[in-house]
Image (cartoon, rainbow, N blue to C red; front, side, top):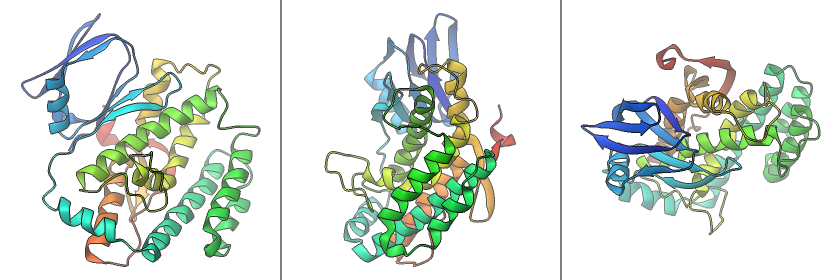
Length: 300
C-alpha cells in the first residue's frame, strides 16, 4: 500500500519506467517507486506528462490532482480499475433508502462537531464547550445544527474569517481540504462506489458528492495545521504546501486505534461499504482528531 504524497511544483517532464515515476526537472532526474505513492499533486506550470504515463499512474491506484491559483482542485485523475464487487456496491448504493442516509449523515455531522470542539481545545482557543453542546441538540434539525455550529466554530477558530475571502488562512484551508478530498475520492472509487451519488450532497453538477459528504469529520485535521502558522501571503510557499499535504500522514483515532489519516480514510470508506452491502447497522468508523503528530512509519 502506498504511503507518500508527492507534490510537483516546478517545470518537469514525467514518465513511468519499470514501475517507477521518473521526474526530470532543472535539478536532474528523480525516481520514485509507484508502489510508494497514493497521491500526486501538480501545482506548478509547464508540467508535461504523456497519456501513457497517466494510464500507468491510474493503473497503480494513484490519484493525480491539479491545483489552481487559489489552491482549489481544478481537475483530477482517479483510478477506476475494476473492483470485483463494483456492480454489487453500486447497486446497493443506488438503493440506499433515505432513512439510512439520514442516520449516516447524522453520525458524520456529530463527529464533525466533536472534532471541531476538540480542535479549538488543541489550538488553545475558547468555545469548545459551546460547540460541543450542539451535539446534544435535537438531531432532527441536523442541517441547522451543522450551520450554527460552523458559524460559532469559525468565530472562535479565527475571528473575522470569511471563507470567501482571498487571504492566507483560506489558502491554507483550501489546499488542505483539497488534499484530503482527493484521498477520499480515490478511496471511494477503489471501493467500488459511484462518487457522484452522495448521502446528503446532491448537486447534479458535482461528480464527487459522496466525497463531499465523507470529508466533513476530517476538516478539523486541516484546521489544526492551517491555523498553527498560516503566514502572511495568499501564495503558499513550497515548504508550506509540503507541511499541509503531510496531513494525510498525521495521527488520528479510528475504531480505538491510532492510524494515519490516509489509513483512517480507508477504514471509514470500508466501514461505509460494509454497511450498505451487508445491511450492518453499526456506526461508521469515523475519526477522532489528535494533536499534530507524523507517524513514525511515514516520516521519511
